[in-house]
Structure formats: C-alpha cells, structure tokens
Length: 497
Image (cartoon, rainbow, N blue to C red):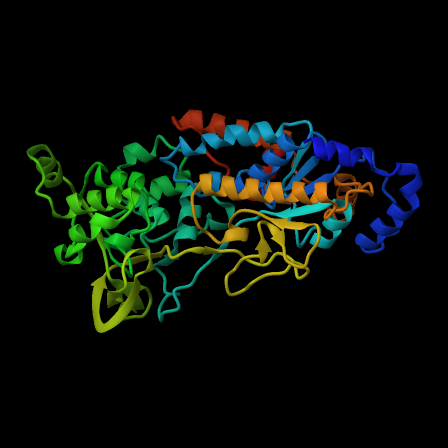
C-alpha cells in the first residue's frame, strides 16, 4: 500500500525516539521497568483469535500493506476456530479455507501464538503497549439461554456445546449426551440446527469417513434417536437455514420428512413477491412437505427408519421433567401467530400450548460473545463490542472483526467481508494519522518476555503442524481424514515432542 510506505518513510529515527518510547512502553506494560529493543520500525498489529475473522483480517492487512507485521494470539494450542470446531464434519469442502489460512500463517510477516489466553495470561492493555493496533476477533463462545423453567435438566444442551462435542472441542469432551431416547427436539431453524439434526440422523457409514470425534462417532452409532423435530417460533417464510442445508436434509439416506400441513397455509400465495433466494428455499420446503412423492422417492421413504420435520409457529415455555424430576421427558410449546410479513414478521402468543414428548432438547437459538477484559468496551445487551466499521468506540488503536463486531450472523463468506472492512478501517487510520505509528513498538518481543515471566509457553505454527501431522496419521489408521486430539494436554504434548 503506497500510502502505508509513505507514512513509514516519515517515521522518526529510532535513536532519537528511544527514550520516549521506552518510557511509554513501561507505562503500557504496567511499569515493569524493562526496556525492549525493537528490531523493526514497521507497524505492528496484534489479532486476538485465530478463527476466520482473525485470519481474514490478517490476510487483508498483509496483502494491502507491504510493511505491516501481524501477530495472532489464540487461547487454544490449535488454530482455525469455528472452521475446526464449528463446521459440520460431513462438510469437508467448507474446511478447505484452512489452506488459505495456512498460507497467511506462514507468511514472513505473520506469526501465530497459540496457548495464550488474552485477559488472563496477558491483558489487552499490555498488548496495546506492545503493538500499534489490537484487533479483537475472538468470536462468540457463550450460549444464549432460553430463559424457561427446566432448561438446566439433564437432557438439555446448547447446540454450541453439542457441536463442540462431536467436533472435538476440548471444553466439550466430557459432555456425554444421553442419546437413549426416541425423539429429539431442536429449537431454532438455522444452519446449525440443521447440522445437528443431520448428525443425529446420519448413518454411521457416512460419519465414520469424516473427522468427527471418535467418542461422538461411537455414541451416535449406539443412538436410539429416530425422530428429530426442528422447531421455530415463526413460519416457513422465515426459516433461517440456507437451501444447501435443507437439500441435505431432504436427501439424507434412511430418513423421511413429516410436517404439519396446516403450517403451510397461504405460503404459496405469499411467495409471489419475495426475493429469489427466499423463493427457492421456500419452494423446496413446500414440495418436501406437501407434494406427493414419485415412485422412487415413495419407496425410499417407506424404507426409512428415521424421521425429521420442521415444526413452525412454536416457542418453548417449559422443559418437562420425568416423574422423578431427574431428566428431560418433554417440552411445552406455546402456539404462535404472526403479525406482519416477510423477515419483519413477529411471533405473537395465542394462549394455546402443546406438549411434545422427548428425551433430548438442543437449543440452537444463537451464540453470544463474552467480554474479554474490563478495559474493553462491551455492550452486554447486544453481546458485541460497540464499534463503527470495526473501530471500537472510545478506544483509539482498538478494532474488532467477526461475530464480536456484528453478532453471530452469516456464514464464513460474511465473516470474510466484515473482516476485510475492519482491516481497511485500520489501514485508513494509519494513512490519515488517526492511528499513530510514529513510535516504534516491540510487538511479540515484549509479550514473549511477559509470558515467559508468567510461565506461559506459546505454541507456534510449526508446533501446530506437529499436532496436525499426528492427527492426520491417527485418522489414516481409522480411514478418516484426521482423528483430533481432544484435550489441551494432548495437544501440548504433541506440539512439544
């Protein structure tokens, strides 16, 4: 970026600014009294979080500015965030983006530091003292609660935790969901809800060829779940999944759809004026629910041992317990009607309720971001860092990207675009002088010293490649693309062998 190079050429000589910089750094690092010599006067940017938002932000910064140096810090020893721990195991094509992220991580001006818990091992303030800019990209690791009685009963899980369980997220390895019931209810009708439904009903022969965690594969092979209801508070015109995920459910081997015909009244007429993507999605839903199947499809459905379906115009009001109040036995649903139309339609209670027997309830009503450091502004109501095009409000030099910036919406491509926007904001601020890069900063030199003092040993990208190699070899032995290590301890052992 020409303006970036021009700005750098105007930096003060390091020797003339050394004393002022050292004093400012000591203040930024809590007055530790240690002076760190910088080997470079390039702009240094720190990114917190190595998921899609973090890597896409780094990618754009490195490509757009030939001088910027980027360090990525990650709480876990392994990179890639939700690409590794959120994307369904039977969607390997979506995970191919890891190849692009790997190229970024191996760039000469990018470094990865895993096993560093920002907010605990090092503060955001300390990072701000060591870098010209800090980008918060750590995603949304919290669960949105339903807020209904009984949601803490055994047998009720968040989709985030359930997905983490079958994808090998260390914090979810002990989940051990009880799959001994016949009916499961999933609350929410987005792509994550359909991922969970598909994994619950998929034949083991399909799953065993994926990178699904081995304990999950074994539990799902023994699962007694034969019916999955995917519940939404609004109607078919507001379903939040994409046509790809719906088509996968429609074509899932060994299953057949069952839906309530009355839920689709008036939908065909309402389709005339909606955008094409919504029309295609709803058309497929209508055909699946209402059209008489052809001979081949009819035969397939007759032989299906498992059932799935959307249930519309319903909201949870209570999780029902068994007689001993020891586990989930059902769910009470309020019946809704809609006010308004299209995406703006609002669900309104009718006063009617109905009970559905089930032994498993999975809440897929959304993720939420959590505050990382008291020094960082945070909107608790919206669960985002308040910002304007990625610039954190009232915090010069602090930026955010990804779900922390927008809330948990969109797919990986959406995150890419919003991360590029944040990177552009940062580069514009460098160019205009709103972001001061006139003083040299030590970057990872200072942070590494602090981490060493605190007994924290980061995992480098070459260390991650040792983990990757071991997981790949373990997978090959089982006929899978990889067999993930399921604990931080195992990951660290592999990284340091």
